[in-house]
Length: 94
Length: 488
Image 1 (cartoon, each protein chain N blue to C red):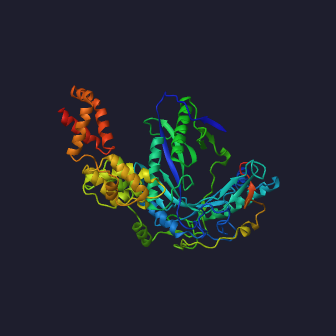
Image 2 (image 1 turned 90 degrees about the vertical axis):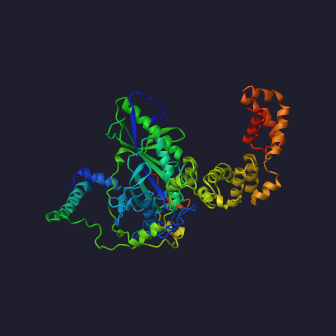
Image 3 (image 1 turned 135 degrees about the vertical axis):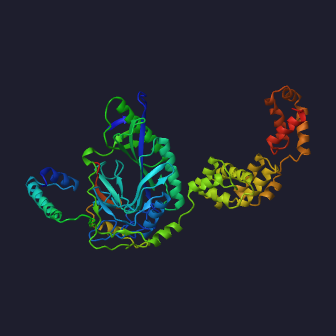
């Protein structure tokens, strides 16, 4: 069961602001997700390695060869704020 | 928050520092870890980006084969166990230098585990991507101070190898020395330009202290992001002293991340405690596992050069070199010096020693560090010629120095320069003996004093000989002749 404090903790890590009305429903929703996943514990999984990847493909690597980068104006085009050829963001130290 | 100053010391109980190091190495690939954007060396901001390294929705990363090759070489150099299969994880945290909200890193299945370099064991080596660069807009900027930053994503996605040691380091000096060894080793591998000032090699230190001889581990703090050996040593020293003082007063060390400011010697907390590590790692679903094939291992093995530590051993113990430990290390740790020596096989260990000393003490300081020795005007043969002439006492060390002054500027044939500049030693038996005889005659007082048992009185006689020969006489030979002629 996910409690209120855990919801607030995860929300803060994700930089989400939840209104007072959203907290309890979120706790219930997250708990039901965990309950669903916990169903797997009904199986005997001794000796079964964790599935980190659904399809077991390996060795798909990229040669170290450069591609054409985005033109800067394209890269910056969707930024809400731009300054000095960079993405302008609120200072993380503020 | 100011948590102390790194100065002063209370010596009541003896404490022992326990230090582990984490080193981030920027790899010298052409392109980034997970996309084909070229690495940036001072290009204008945000000119080396693409949907992958900007974290745009739907973009898919693909791992750079060269970065994995370099990771394997590092693992081999550190005698690590190379994982046949390893995977990437997402390390989740929000910061503007991380466009996806997570860094792709490795967690419990890293590329390399265990290992050792000299006296320090290695815990693991893993691959990850670097963050972007944040420029905090200061008061001089156009935006009001401290409320805005500008992100440059050129660096974002640069491949990094993170090397984590076991807590085997016991002093700041040991940390510095080991990091120097690691740096020359990585430089020799060619996997990084290991330029600390430009951030290609960054070091964090995990530091705790405990009563000397104890097996317990004290509470550790993490000293972040030090980019010079001197700062690392000073930072560790300051933090060890801070912790010792806390414990001596009966207080506790708080686990936290710290920053050392080298200009003030101050140690400050870097992150508030609420932001304690809660990275919620989980396997990166967008990347398939790395499977290291026999072919990849063979390629990495074939790329391994002789490492500096092994080379120093060889210079010290190989019968054709037999160099002193320090000389061997100096040559092995500056690859271009060692290479220059090895371009011509020594005729004997004595010749190797003379030539090694010439390379280290005369040639290297004159050439400087901007170009490798092999690219200087001076040829290996010229140094062989000079070392031979020195050994046959045809020139003095003073003459050799004059020859190097000219060779470094003009290059050319050393014999011809010795001839042209008249650097041949005034020695040659009779000629020098005659000068010494004249010198003794001109300094009767000094001669009497030497005879009376005061060897230091030789100064004026040697001075006379040096003036007469324009400094080309060999000092040792002059002294020998003086003693011979005076019968002492």
